[in-house]
Length: 80
Image 1 (spheres, rainbow, N blue to C red):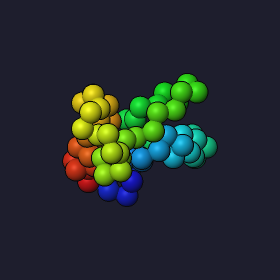
Image 2: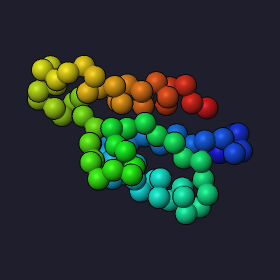
Image 3: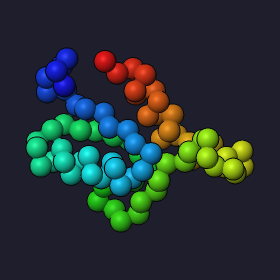
């Protein structure tokens, strides 16, 4: 980041594929990229984000399924 050189770069996305790509790019270029999602980078189990505006069954989902979405929103709101 230009504002705080060397600080971690927070990456948020609605797909695990994009998160994996960002982490791969960061490793190739020695960049400190961090993210919180429902995906373990070392795992083959991808869990894509829930789109609040596109999921017709959002009212019946377990509240904890939305945790990563709200963590992303909080982190982005607090960023510089």
